[in-house]
Length: 331
Image (cartoon, rainbow, N blue to C red; front, top):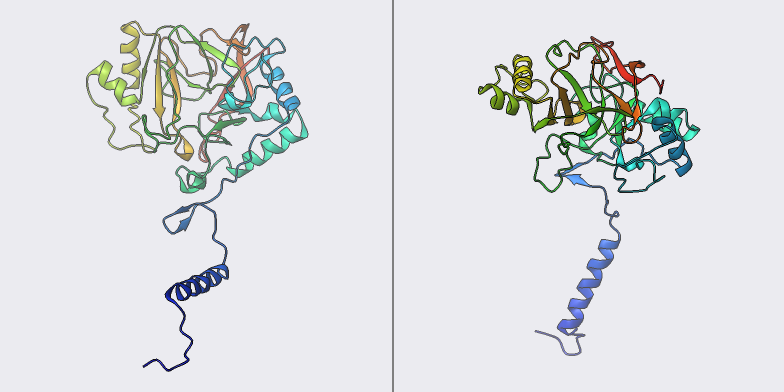
């Protein structure tokens, strides 16, 4: 029974008091973290530096890379430094030795980038920051056949499939065009073709002539040889088809192709998928396969291929696989 004179709050007042108590309790809790989560585990932040140099530094870098004449006809979607050159965001590789010679800021960026992912780091997401870095960042030492002086943009993760919203992989280059590339000697599988990596920003160009593109090696083996690869197991998560590559290249050449492209060869470190270009009628055993090379921002200048001072990244057990290509006019 309610006693006479008791202070009875109306329902609205009681509800308001309850909300006030809840609000005061919530305000005393620790602030909510804005860091992204994966389930109950905190995702790491990317430890790689962003390539944020001054416009003057980028101007000096591209002038040293391509020559002062520029002559660029490449698309420069973001942050154009000079109409004659691509933008920093428009390239997939940076020459860290060259950048170090531009300025103290360039040298600091190069040193920090190489230290963040040491030369003999292992494959896999756990050794590469669990995919915390995206295409805004470049990383060194990403592939055993890659020049030690290059940093590679983290463009295409193996888990990102063509057609997905997050896919930013490699597009096939048109036949009859020139493509920026890199190549290092020491590969024992290049008797029937010279294997390059497409590398926008390398400063060295080759001509694709009549070309055909595939996603992976096994697609080309099935197309040209009409059978599956004989690999007993995958290497670095890919069917390499090593036993069929020579025959596949010879057969493609016999059918009139001069180059092949593989857009998703995903055996690089950090689960990266690289863009391979195979010149079918050239041997790639040495540093400089015997084909035509060009240099400049759009491949408009002559280039004499020589071995650079940089070797490939290699492995812990085979650190000196071979030296990498450069233009003598640039060296």
